[in-house]
Length: 226
Image 1 (tube, rainbow, N blue to C red):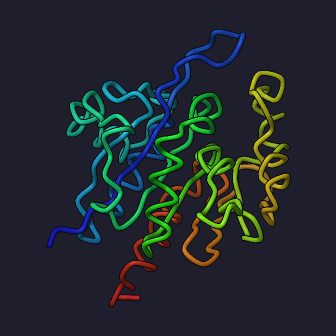
Image 2 (image 1 turned 90 degrees about the vertical axis):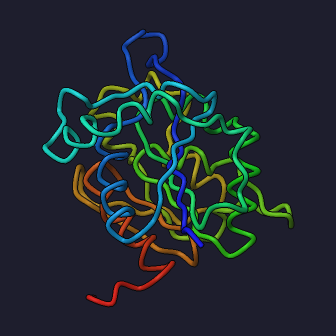
């Protein structure tokens, strides 16, 4: 049976009152996609509303991201809406970041349902950079927040201030995760940090995206090459 992972993203394309364009951060889609496909998984794309996924970070695209766009841009234009996702089809869900995630992922009832269902059936939940915004309101059937008591990372308050977005985002992600009972930690700004806590994998920033994906694949099926 084919093994599938869904990469989930925002549908939001503006950075608060600034009106600056934003969306899902390209490298946080492209690099995990490369890891997952190399490890034998079929990857599908979903977003809050479906259809075109707005992108950020395209101008800073590295070689891998440029190659991804050259071959998979049509898939990003036809993402599945969250309400059509059947969690039983996926081994894992991976939330890419980008500032857009801060506006619509926390309140997506559909993605919260999918995330909880995948985790409950033994699958892996992962998120990088602003992607953990999708997790702040996810509860397990017990009523406990998914992140409560788990070690996590995500875009730090320090990085948000350095990006001059701390007054634009609806909340500071580091603070919100701590409010939900998560055990948050971070590396120095812009350095990779990946944390595995049970079947929850989180990463701090774009530099962490490939590492999060590798950790997800290792949880699902350890790499025989080490």
